[in-house]
Image 1 (tube, helix red, strand yellow):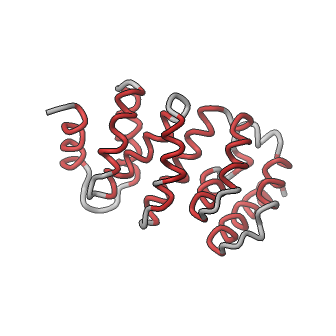
Image 2 (image 1 turned 90 degrees about the horizontal axis):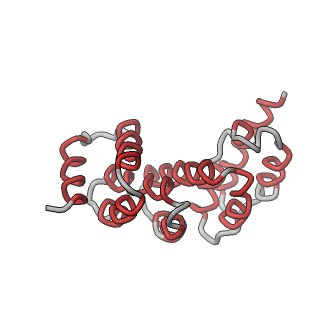
Length: 179
């Protein structure tokens, strides 16, 4: 049995049937910290193809952790994970996006943030808005709140109500912090 199969078996036995975000996040972070980026990269697809949505979420988190070394992991988030039916997986997509932006530095992530806000897929645009909440708590954006406000405000009339609500919530978060 190989490493990935053993890990999936371990997760199947460890993660309970009920939703356990804290455990899922901890398992993904632990795997990332104890394995090479290459091993994490090889694990993403088998994890994501699991029938267990929480094991899928571990794979989604890993994409965020290794995106700097493997840009195709960020493309996988944008092009594949964003089409997943589960809103729970969409929440992890947003968290994985934030993990990646933090890893590369929010100021260096601005072109990616713009790119994702320009996506044709509502889940991708929402992942940006939700993933970076509270925007002005993030390094760089904390010191440059106008950048965060301008990025969000530029998309407040998004065609998707789902995205508009997320952007509205993010702008309200910022106004509460700055008032």
